[in-house]
Amino acid sequence: MVSVCQNFNELNNAILNNSISKNSSVLLFKFQLQLINQTYFQTVGFDTDLNNFYFPLQGYNTKAIGGKNGNGYFSTSFNYFDGDKHTGHAAHDIFINDKNQDELNDNSKKPVNIMAFSGGVVVAIAKNWEPSSYLRGGKFIYIYNHKLNILCYYAHCKDIIVSVGDVIKPNQVIAKVGRTGLNAYKKRSPTHLHFMVLKLNSNYYPQPINSYNLLLKSYF
Image 1 (tube, rainbow, N blue to C red):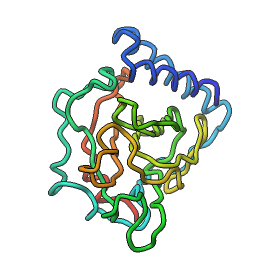
Image 2 (cartoon, rainbow, N blue to C red; image 1 turned 60 degrees about the vertical axis):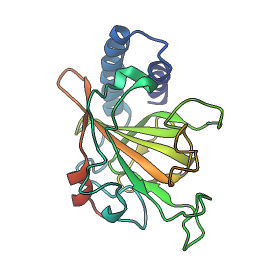
Image 3 (cartoon, rainbow, N blue to C red; image 1 turned 120 degrees about the horizontal axis):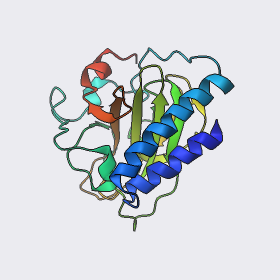
């Protein structure tokens, strides 16, 4: 399981860095996820409560979602295969109480846990990021739910505590909220989790969906 997910991770990095053509990346994306599906059932053999959703920030609720009534989401022209040059904001920013920007909750003085919105398998991760990096997502995680055919993306993390190939249960702690990423690191940006859901169509092409209503219905 780990090796096939590592191959996807390498592909994701190539797409992010725009070091692979779009035509090749679309074909390899489909092939790699089909292989992950096949390997999952061969090695794991069970589903981990893949139908339920949990709010991705421990101790917070939907009031922490940026914008008004989910209007922070706009997917216009977003394309996963554009890598780090994509446009639009096909995600929701979920903010923590961190006025002094020390990556700690102002009340508890502790980091805020990022919880798995959905179960699945970790297929891509960036555990290292430096302020000199141009990448906007900073430290991030992609978790693939093969049953619902969705990819959940968690960006701007501080510490990531899962690894590529890990099978994840819903509401499992996967990381801590941070300020990593080109714009998230800057003082003008409040500390937040950048959360996106990509839905794969019948041909495994990833398209962003507005997860606002799913977040509203999620468990806390």
